[in-house]
Image (cartoon, rainbow, N blue to C red; front, side, top):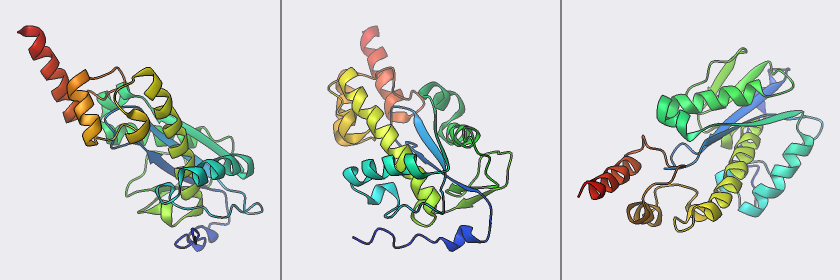
Length: 210
């Protein structure tokens, strides 16, 4: 399995300075926080097999997670909570969480490379890279840290809120999740600003009024 295909080390080679890769997981789910990570890789300690976290198996992600934490020069995982998502909207909450991830690094990078098409407000230069998690090694590493961290959290919520299948769909609006939401109603970790959750709250209120 040639997982290294597509990652372009030359994108950061010209910087000659510390570069942080930044990525997020959890913009689309109906529940839970949006989780971000920032990673500064150590060029003297290469990590084989980095790729977009969605293209890796769960077992491979878990193994790479430990290796990234061990070998990276600096890394930090951050988040924006459900309440912040509902207050700010998911885009602004994601930018806030990315900002927190970069600010949490114990080494200040000279450049932050952000997965996607826009950058958060940072104290150093930032560059947006579309599909960066499949192009830039540090962004791929960040995507792995963010996804493994959020997936672990969703597995824990499965035990706290049984019946929704959160451990399986990770909060995304699958048919199983939507059916459970309609049948059981929203939980405290559901995002009230997202349409299916808003509709579920409205349905519950209408039943109370009857």
